[in-house]
Image 1 (cartoon, rainbow, N blue to C red):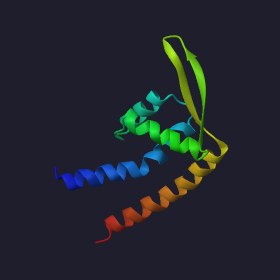
Image 2 (cartoon, helix red, strand yellow; image 1 turned 30 degrees about the vertical axis):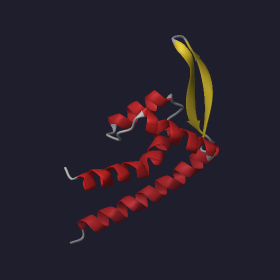
Image 3 (cartoon, rainbow, N blue to C red; image 1 turned 60 degrees about the vertical axis):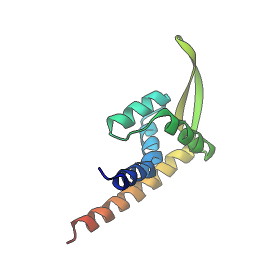
Image 4 (cartoon, rainbow, N blue to C red; image 1 turned 90 degrees about the vertical axis):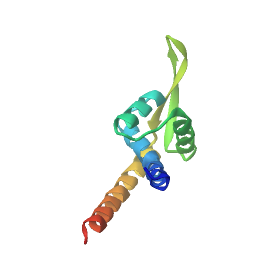
Length: 111
């Protein structure tokens, strides 16, 4: 496959990754490896080195919070969840996603 196309595909995924993370957390709090698993199952290729900076950025924007939980098999675990601001932002982003999806589909289907 052409490397330019691969780069474009990667950029498209990156563009929606934060939105997808918020969508995963809308279902309830999650540990980062659970978020990665859900994203991978949806074919959104992501690794820990990509996820953690995004979680930090979303937390710094006030969209996420986290809590520590002791683990029986290692160090404490950090569980992330949406804040009220995060829930409102997700609602707004969902509307934007729907509009974008309709626009792209309209352009794709017009010939």
